[in-house]
Length: 380
Image 1 (cartoon, rainbow, N blue to C red):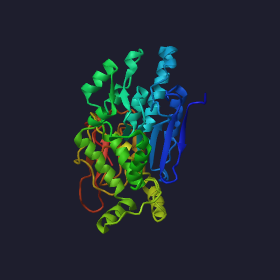
Image 2 (cartoon, rainbow, N blue to C red):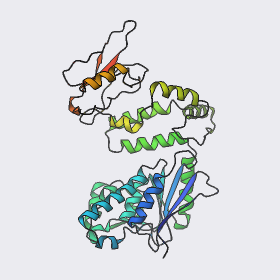
Image 3 (tube, helix red, strand yellow):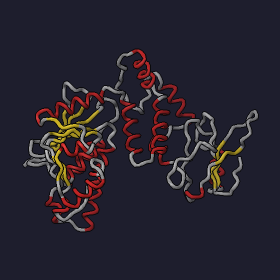
């Protein structure tokens, strides 16, 4: 029997789409080695614009993925179970956080781990013979209910987890977990066509859109929209944003390039290099959402300076930080960044209070923000 693997091909008539196939006959069960291969594959996808979307399916016609290998369950101990669980989580996370969108082409039963893999995809397309379920309760283990909650409503998820019952593809489609159901012989062609629609878009825009979607999934409306606005601020600085707007006005297709969001393009490399040398690297969207005030809420606009400078602490402030770790003065803050800087090492997060210092608008002065213990006075 051949080793379990992830087979990969680049269809000639879909130049920016990668077709990945989970291949472990006869029903593509997931063992530890295959989980590791899956994590390695999705984490290894480069955001260079050459691959803009992935279609993930299962080999053969018997199943998409029929679950985890039950043989592994028989030899589990508390210690090995935790190590194995970490490997499985990392594999699912690698799909969800892959730099490009992943379309799940579910060609048969997606049970247990197969259902979780489908839920980790950005979009799901199912064949008419596809079914979804959590049979874990029937084999003496748990898991997958949280992933299933991304595909069906909470009460339906509870019934499936408690009973081990399965849902056909049409029922999951009605619940919103599957985009549409197609004949089995048309599944891959339809999935590749959907991937082409995504691949037509600007790679930097798609990369940033997916990251924002992952970040806002568990946030409230205000916080989630705040993250999207920060993403807009980043995207609007790229030439692809201007090209998309110009193409819309001119009623033409935008000119897309094989470029990632991290690549400023040949015309901007010199200015970008100079900006980074002076101001340092810009924060990522992930760091933006992680820099929140105690309690998890994003800070309001009040108390932040509107200066188009860097957040990098100045030399004098850095000296103060070494001598007084609970009192630091930061340099002026970019106008579009409306969030608190990260707490200092050794300082309780609950004591961080951003506020304006030197609020005078006279010549030679600029607004700054200070971060220090509650009730302390920062000096500049």
